[in-house]
Image (spheres, rainbow, N blue to C red):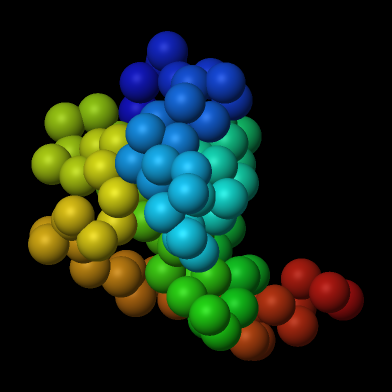
Length: 103
């Protein structure tokens, strides 16, 4: 992960990948998880606590991992432009982990 990624750069890169006016998009999701990736060093692991409805878990995984990883072919690209993206088993929504975290 590049040390030069900042919350501001996340906004810039996400807005470039998802230009305003292109209708409903992953833009806001991109910004949320790109910025979250700055706080977590274990890739998409926190996504275990993100529900899978409406593509939230998928978005979390993509924007916390592929989108922000130096050298990834999909770095700073829209998810739809990333044919190599695959969801990681370890980062799927884990209801049991979620319940445990709430205890």
